[in-house]
Amino acid sequence: MRAVAVAGVGQVKVREHWDTSLRDLAYQSIKEAVKDAGVDHVDALYVGNMLAGELSGQEHLGALISDYCGFNGIEAFRAEAASASGGAALRQGFLSVASGVQDYVVVCGVEQMTDVLPDKVTSGVSLAVDTEYELASGISLTALFAMLTQRYLHEGSCTRKDLAAFCVNAQKNGAGNEYAMFRRETTAEFILKSPVVADPIRALECPPVCDGSASVVLAPLEEVECDTPVLITGSAAATDTIGLDNRKDLLVFNSVKESTRKALIMAGKTLEGIDFYEPHDLFPIVAALSLEASGFARKGEGALLARNGDIALDGKIPITTMGGCKARGNPGGASSIYQAVEAALQLRQKAGANQIECEAGMIQCIGGTAATAITHVLEVS
Amino acid sequence: MEISRNWRLKNQRYRLEGTTCTCGYKSFPPRRICPRCKENPQSVSQFMGTGRVYSHTTVYEAPTGFEDYVPYSVALVKLDEGPMISAQLTDIEPEEVTIGLRVEMVTRKLREQGDTGLIIYGYKFRPVLG
Image 1 (spheres, each protein chain N blue to C red):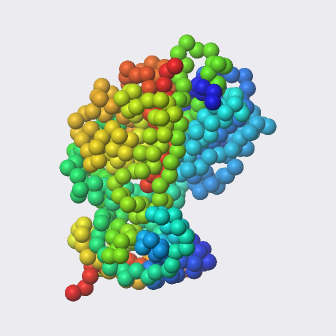
Image 2: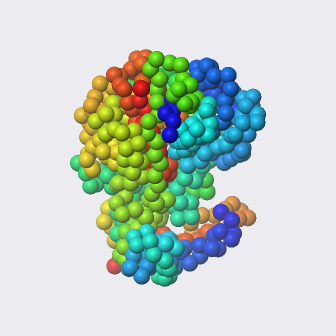
Image 3: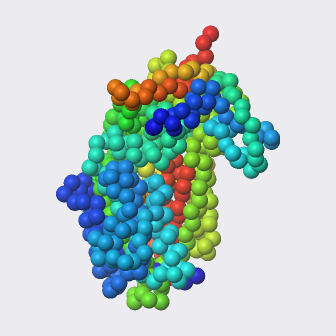
């Protein structure tokens, strides 16, 4: 396999982009990434998107976006794995460059969610669960995570305030990221006073419904002219049962565990060599269970890392360093490409106010109730 | 969901029909391949519909089609035979639901698809009577 470098990155601010179309959102981040990479052509485009068919009435995003970006003729298609779609597209890009099949690949994550009313977003996002057995009973993705939260609090020693501390940390980091949707610091008390969405999950523990697009250009390392290029050294995907209720232990994200293990093996690293971690913090419970499944915390103790401040920028294992889903926003299939862009900026020492000392980071996205998890390791060569 | 898709689910919705493997592993919904021993075939089995609440929540922001029913309680119910099932709770106030509560299956209306669409029935769980 060839070494794969992140040659360029681009992102648009996560917002409610009522004045911008899906294709234009994609174009803006691609244009920036291609300019950043300094390449004059691309060989393939992989799009990470979750809900364009459902929310925008538009499928076939590979052709749509390659045409609009002037890439007409190249290989282009969309990868779909619910909210892990960005990770799926990134992995496709990684594999095609590593294998030698393609040289310059654009991976674009794009999602437009604010064109429709909130109940349609709730339903759309919930298509990632088992629709015949979970959604058919009116059980949304949020309700499933709420039940996980309820059980987590019942079994463990963590409190709701510990879980809310994930949001406090994310919003603190979002304040330093101009691309983030929420740029205000907040407190656990304030979060826990917000309206209930699905008990015990509160409105301010949910990621905002938003629009966004982020892109990276991947290329073989030997083609990249840069003193300290950022490499993707680990990439892995794993699955679990589609229905949350079909798992042996619901509080263990096996897909996260397995994809982390495989990605680290590929990168030749252990967790000690990971300087920051970007979990898919859809809700605090996801951050907690992902920290546990990845191996950063023991079972039932993920939220203790939030309580103790270990996840802060200057903590033992900084997470959601640019705001994560909670503050940067969670534009579905674009989220994991935002993670890739943010990790590259951290590794290039271009993360501004949120810069941490780092040489390697791990990014991770999940689909549905972690029925899919896709993990990548990025590091400076 | 369309008519045929709902019709195909009738044995699960009304009779809690799942599968049992030759190794003894029981699944709901039905499976072709046993998740434990990876063997095939599975025989059809009907679950009694009694169990305990493993976890629960009350939904205030519902997906499309369920807006008129909020707030409503849902639960992960651990059936006495082993499998876990996701379902709505009924005949109980949200604040009365606790982890470990004994519940039993009943057939109730899940939703209506507008004035001219289907009325969909299926399983819900209520506290065990008596």
